[in-house]
Amino acid sequence: MIDLNILSNCTLCPRECGVDRFGGSLGYCKSDAGFNISSICVHKGEEPVISGKKGICNVFFPHCNLQCVYCQNHDISRNSGVFYTEKLSLDEVILRICETLEQTENIVGFVSPSHYIPQMTAIIRGLHKAGIRPVIVYNSNGYDKAAILRMLEGMIDVYLPDFKYVDSALAFEYSHSQDYPEVAAAAIKEMYHQKGSTLIVNDDGIAESGIIIRHLVLPGSADQSIEVLKYIAEISPKLHLSIMAQYYPTALVTSHPRLNRTITIAEYQKVVDAFYKLGFSRGWVQDLVSNESYRPNFCSRQPFE
Image (cartoon, rainbow, N blue to C red; front, side, top):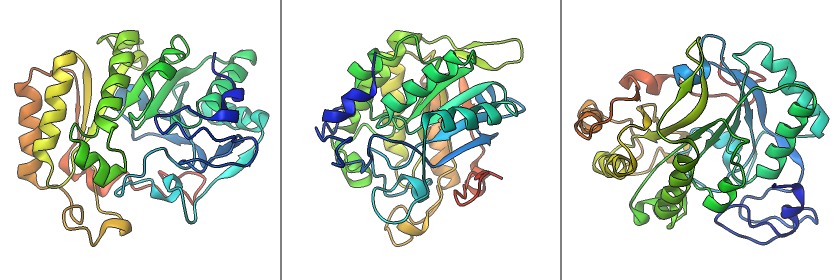
């Protein structure tokens, strides 16, 4: 079991800072030991088996153990500057989740949980204690320690990780994490070990158990995307993938030589063609125009409306 005590010498994520988050020391993610929340809201824009018709109750944690220069949630994910967060009690978090769940498909998604896993597990246990057992979705950037994920077996229903890169130089340039490829690969293998390639859905088509791997196609990186797909195919071409075209340049990368534009039709089609050629048949391929949507405003209580 993962409890809050691990935060007194925090080695939760691959950064392994070793700081005492109870004592005010802040590691790479600049997060303390509290129940800090950036948003608890209904989100209807996830994959169809996650959102359904009503949406998912997403719990967004602040900061991140990656610092992707292009992050579309940069208002809450940055580890410096102004960001949106509230310091709540565990009971307050559970109350807000319960209120939000009433509007959804009875699914709770924890977004960017890698550096808040003890708080996440405490929230899940609190929900269970209250007799509430929604489907639990672990929505992460993929930069997770396999050993920690192993301790979550039986608690997480659906894993929803990113797999961003297999090139260490690109991972360092874009996400300040040279070891991302091997760490994410090990994490996804652990998730696959727990869930296999079968995505179990209920009679309404809502996911109840399994794994969905997301990949965001970046401008100028179609070949890198194909290498990511090749790696996943080696694990199993029966896995469910979500190929995403929603990239748009935020204000933080408007001057970047490669990231200052959306992806082209040719770039995206190259990746989509590879998806099918590699034998994938399960999952979702976003429309190219999706870059005009999914632009959250975390100043609002409902960031996606």
